[in-house]
Amino acid sequence: MSVKSLTAAALRDAMAKLLAGTSQRTDGKLTWHNVYTEAGIPRATAARAKDVITEWQEAVRTRSQSDAQPLPSEQTQRLKEELDQRTQEAAATHQALRETIRIMANQIQALSLAVEQKDATIANLRAEVAAVAGNKVVPMKAPRHR
Image (cartoon, rainbow, N blue to C red; front, side, top):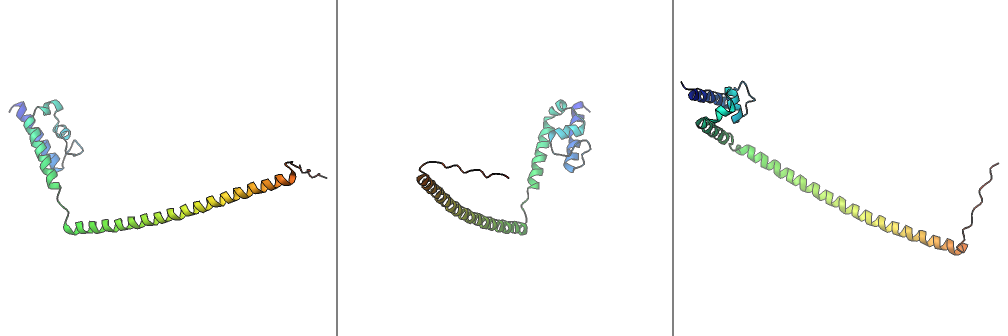
């Protein structure tokens, strides 16, 4: 047997282990790196086995297609119902938050008006004090301590 055929046989054996889920040297992921690592063959040597690489790619593609089976109709229906329920809950939450924002905006507006009225009252009182005192500040005497 030639080195090339021994390499191909080792790679095919490693492919079979990985596809069966019985890898011994790797984490079991379906990658080309794991194939040549599982086979114990250097990357450069494995890269020359073009026909084995093509077989590996086809095996992984076939495996991926068989794994992508549609969900049973009961499960699909249950998931649709759950999605509808969560969509309704989200809409209700959204509406409640909008109402809360509206209430808070009204409260902010009312508080802003109260602050404006307070500022106007303070300004009026200052004007009255200034008019009564003739723009003079009369200091208060500090109380004596005994």
